[in-house]
Length: 193
Ligand code: GDP
Image (cartoon, rainbow, N blue to C red; front, side, top):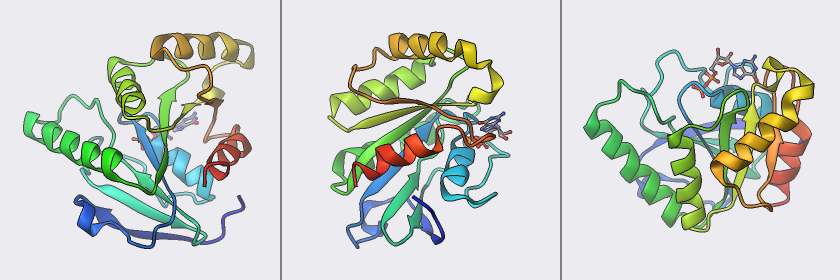
């Protein structure tokens, strides 16, 4: 999709605050600092629309971006940041559960992981949670520019094994820096709208 028009609709916590126009939604999840904001900015062709995190784990709200009047990207606060208090973590869990399990418009969750490293326990938990509730998952392995192309297949294999991914779930090699994987990611999203 060629994106010209992006509108930040707002940051919400409770379902009654969410938009009511029924457009399809795609949530972006990943651990803090994995490159989630950079992914969104690359997909919408903006340099700094989604805030590149300076304080990981700080915003505990769902940010809704309306794209071309056709869909929403819903930026989910990153997980796995050590300095978050127990009560904040619990509030995050409740918000995510409410949104992921109860949102009819949610078409898929884009789970962003770092291609350089094996997925973390938190990544595995997120993947398992989504599978458990039959929420479609698109796994994006970002920061691919940081490893040589010849190693991508090996890293992809590790990611699939560690997450114990279903064979039919897509795994897209991505680089926000270079724009790699942009078309494949958009194709996956557009096929589910
Ligand atoms: P977030 O916390 O998940 O939203 O992560 P950010 O998008 O803020 O990215 C965290 C850091 O990783 C920033 O310094 C980014 O510039 C860097 N980064 C994100 N994506 C890429 C990528 O594809 N390639 C490279 N080389 N760096 C990236």
